[in-house]
Length: 220
Ligand SMILES: *Cc1c(COP(=O)(O)O)cnc(C)c1O
Image (cartoon, rainbow, N blue to C red):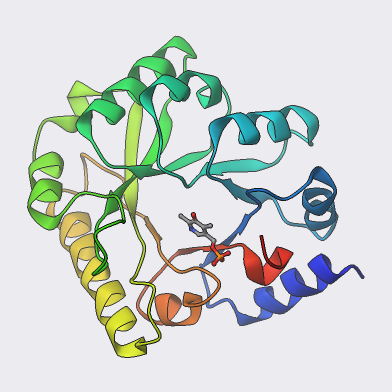
């Protein structure tokens, strides 16, 4: 078994029930993705549209491609035909563009709203007040070609486990709030949180999807 296959098998045994593993393959060569694919991995995450599209063109078509990076509006059109889930939506303007490109492709594109939960200034996302404004607007009718499937967040880059846990718990609370508040307008079933260093805490706090790169593929 390749190193990559071994890592995937190991992480799979660590997953809590109903958690999806997305293999974050950004900057990795095609051969690395092929190893993961042969090990049964079907969900891959990338943070650059061009790189993801080049890989999509060359790899089997039953792969689910997750856009996990900060997204520029002018790049949306390249991935609209095939992207499985857009994690990092952090503005209404971006939602509008995804809706527009999805319509051109005759698709409904599932999206997650990125929420700012970390202490750092550098992480993208809506804050809590903005999120409430977005989710209580007439989104579902305004953008018929997107579907808000849930929330995504990144915890602070810190060794303080209690801090990380607190941030994930806060996001889970928001997620539950919206899932219960308006269950018909959205389909809030996905909570994307947890990376190589913190996915166990994230799962314990209610994550349904973890994005794991370096633990599968090694350093970048
Ligand atoms: C790179 C990246 C990951 C994976 O990070 P690892 O620490 O390598 O697991 C997860 N989520 C996002 C948004 C990323 O950019």
